Image 1 (spheres, rainbow, N blue to C red):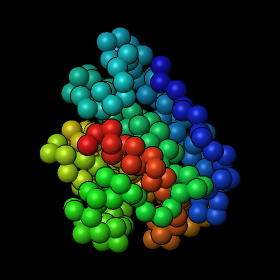
Image 2: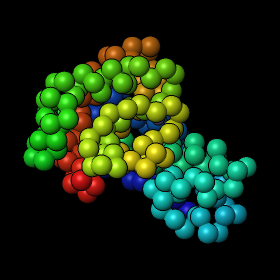
Image 3: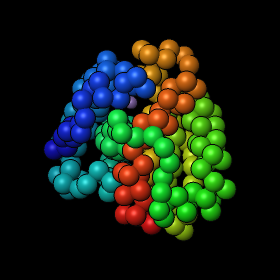
Image 4: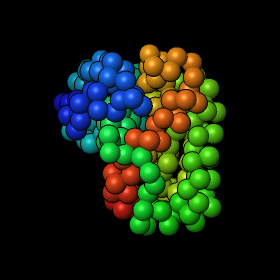
Length: 202
Ligand code: MN3
C-alpha cells in the first residue's frame, strides 16, 4: 500500500510564496486522493503492487489495459507530488551549486537562461500539467513539460525537479496568474535536495 509521505515542514512554512490554505488542500486532499485511488486500482494486481512507484510508472505496459489510465494518472499524481514537496523549503531559493551548477551552465548557458527556459516550458503547458528538469538516457539535463500527471519517468528519464502548474496549486492565492506563481516558486526551491537528486542519477 502506498502512503502519503510526511511533509518535512508546516503548511504555513512556504508563505508568502505558497499560502497555507493551498498547501493544506493540495497535500491533504489532492495528494491523498491520488494515493487512495492508486491503492484501489492496484488492489487486485498482486505482482504489481509490491513494486516501487518509479518501477510502476516506468513500466506502465505491465498494467492491464482497463486499469492503466487510472494507475498512470494517480500513480503519476502520487510520484509527482511526493517529489514536489521535497524540492521546496522555507530556506530555499538562490541557485544550485556543485556538479548541478556546472551541468546547468553547460546545457543552458547559465542559470538565468535555464530559469528562462524552464519558466517558458511551465507557462507554455496548456491546461493542467507539470514542468520538469530531468536527466535523459544520455545523462544530460533537459527541460520539458507534461500534461496531467504524466512525468519524465514514463519516457525512461529521471526527473530531479518538478513544478505543478495545475490551477489547484496556485489558484487561491494567484487566481489565473500562473506567471506570478512561477516567479514566486523560484524563491523556495530547495536546491540542496535537487542537487541530491542529480547526484543520485547523474
Ligand atoms: Mn497538484
